[in-house]
Image 1 (cartoon, rainbow, N blue to C red):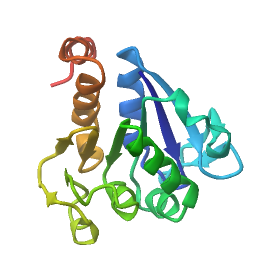
Image 2: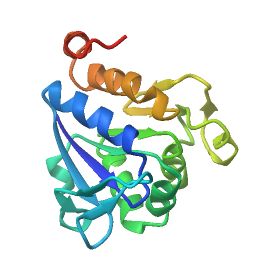
Image 3: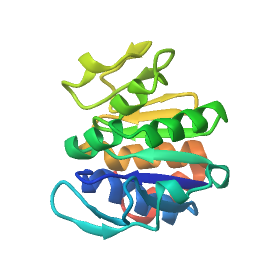
Length: 181
């Protein structure tokens, strides 16, 4: 499995780092892409990183899924990008995985990708979601769309997505490896 992570200035570090690490341990290839013209991206709490590439240089056919971490500034930047919306729609049309955590499901909603799906998001953001059914569950799986509610659910989100992308045994093996609950 190869996952594209879209990063925008203001992303929530925990929501990016935890899934990134656990997916890599589970055998997935994870590629980070900045949504701006530079690979330099700064998280909402000051983490500075250099992404692998920029969104405009990505061949979507090379990937099995796309991931949007939350963070209020990051989500605003993701939602403002026509290129992000185009990428999400293409991944969805091709039946690929769509992952979003915290407020990032709002970006999926803005692209019209949740109207027939059940999802969750950061508490308080649900009023802005256009979806079939909002859930207060920490992680929600609806077909190839997996959403989660925030930084505190990042580990659980990573294991659920890993189990769905690969298999339950891989997810459980990594859970034991890192002594997760």
